[in-house]
Length: 208
Image (cartoon, rainbow, N blue to C red):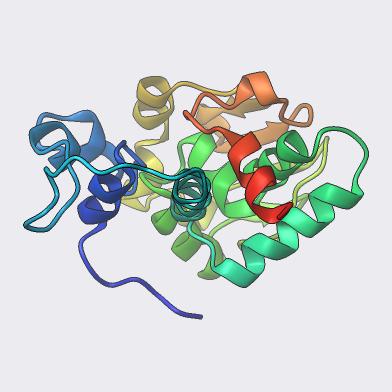
């Protein structure tokens, strides 16, 4: 899979807002988006007229970068969301939120989605009692995520309580930090996703 190896802070500045790609650093004064809230490059501060298409494209790119997925995979999610019952934009965000790596991040077991993805690939978690190492799996209501006893001494996992408290726990998830266990209580609804995303722009982009 293709991987972006350049500065992640450049992506936040390009999209004009925090994408929380560097974990806890994004909550401190060291955050590049707070220090330089304009696009990178020598023309980053220039005022540009943004067309409707450009706004739609930037919103799609922003969501892709937040969840760390490639273009084809994102398009497949949109196609599934469009065929599902309900509002297409909300369906899309719900599927992205239910990705295994995102749930690990939301539960506070990782500082960023990238770190969560790496942990999942290394098999540090179990899903419903079985080892699971596919970051893109979509979880369902009632699924139980646990950290086996042998993996609980890993430093990043031992900080689960502090990370979860600082970031806030979505209402559709439940965590037992002492037992290193999380549960999917319900499907994520649009109001549960606090990240500033205008999914209507993405729907308009793909509807052309």
